[in-house]
Each structure stands twice: as C-alpha cells, then as structure tokens.
Amino acid sequence: MTLKGISLALATTALVAVALPSLAQDKSGPNVGAAAEGAAPGAASTMTLAQELYAVGVAQGDAVTVLAAAKLAASIEVASAEPAALDPSKVTVDQATFAKKAAPSPVPAAPAPMMNDGTPRAAAKATFFTATNEDEGAAEAPATAEAMFAKAKELAAEDEALLGVIDDAMAETGRGRIGGAVEWVSRLPAGQTDVWEIPYYGNSYAEIAVVGDGDANLDVAVTDENGNVICYDVSWSDKLYCDWTPAWDGYFYVTVQNMGGSRNSYYLLTN
Image (cartoon, rainbow, N blue to C red; front, top):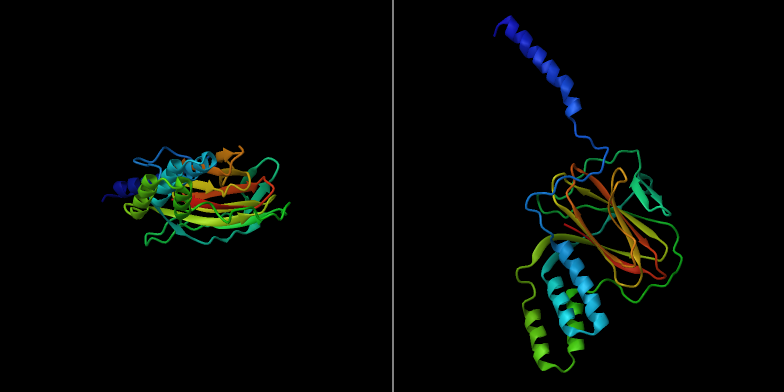
C-alpha cells in the first residue's frame, strides 16, 4: 500500500471512530419498538383468558364455561420461580400518581433475560408501604386447572353426559401444552405495593400477565427504565395482560397496588 493509501485508510478509520458514538441507539424515549416478526401471544395470554373465563363461569354457575377455562389452563406449561430481592433504592415509587421508574443511579447491570440453557427468566421484587388491613382473603392463589375441573364437575351435578365430557377433557390434560412461561406468586396485603424488575431483550416479543385470586382490586402498571408507561390498568379488576416488543435490551418494572380491603394472592407470568 502506498503512503497516500495508508494515509487515506487512517483518515477513514479516524472518521468512523468519531462517527460511531452518534450512531448509538437513543435510549431516552419509550423502550418500545416495531412488532417482532412472527410474534404471537403465548402462555401468559392463555392463562389470563382462562382466569377471566373461569370467573364468568363461576358467577353464572355454568359448568360448560368453567370447563372451557379449565381446558385453556391445562393447555399451558408454566415453570414456577422465586424472585430475587430488589433493592428499594433502585426504584422510585409515587403512590399518588402511579409513576414508577428506575432510579437515575446506579444504572442497572446488563440484563440476562432468558438463558440459552433454559434457565427461567430472572425477576426481582420489592414491597412498599404499610398494610392497611390484615384480612387474608378467601383464596390462597388463582384457580389452577385442577381446581377448575373440580368446579366444573361440581356445577355439572348429576348431568352424566356432561360429567363424561369433563372426564374426557381431564384425560387429555398435558397433551400439546404451550411452554415457555414463568410464574411467580405474591401474597400482597391490602394497601401495599409490589414493584417487580424484569429484563427483556430488544427486538424480542415480550408479554406479561398479572392474574389475581379475585379477593381484592389490583391496579397495575408496566413501565420501562425511563418511567414511560407501556401498559396501565386501574379498572376494578385484578388481571392485566400486556405485550410489546422492546427496542433495546433493558429492564421493565411491573407495579402492582392492592387497592382492596384484603390480601390478594396473584401470579405474575412472563414469556
């Protein structure tokens, strides 16, 4: 290479080195990107639908609706996990405005959402404020598929034909299950707030569901590390489903407030 060629190469390298920082991804806005190609709702969505359908079936005393819910719940495979302890200083919590975001410092470490060896997604949780009521509620957790099948049988009473259909559905349990979901359980007293920190990869489909046991109203918000709201629900409900595609690797915060007068034992599910 000639001296002129070497000089040109060095100049080009220097130019690229100067330009690279300007090409860095802007992470100051909402961490939501274009929908991931081929993404489709998974186990978290299915369980949310199952719980909603179950509540309707029980309220109406309809064994067929409860059976449909049981079949949905039995169609998914969920790994149970225990959350790590989240340092309360890492997040700011405004109980009045429902604004939750990562604290400006220290900056969280790079996320490790789902390991290639199948290790479940990591999550950390901190609980804030003082309980306003010690009532433990009627339920220990949202209904399982087994409990739903049992309720369907109870509502079917002496309808032998329907009981046979329920038995057949129970025999099919476990075939072709949808996998990949992780669940954590939290027993949240009245007046308290849980904040969960969950990492996700950028450009990868993400879904989160909060499924309560029906004992108390839960207000739920999903925000990114900048405090931008991804999903938000303050209706009279204890269930929320949220899906999106992060634009970059980052932490997301799920804030669950118990607005009722008794404990709510809820599941947090992710893909």
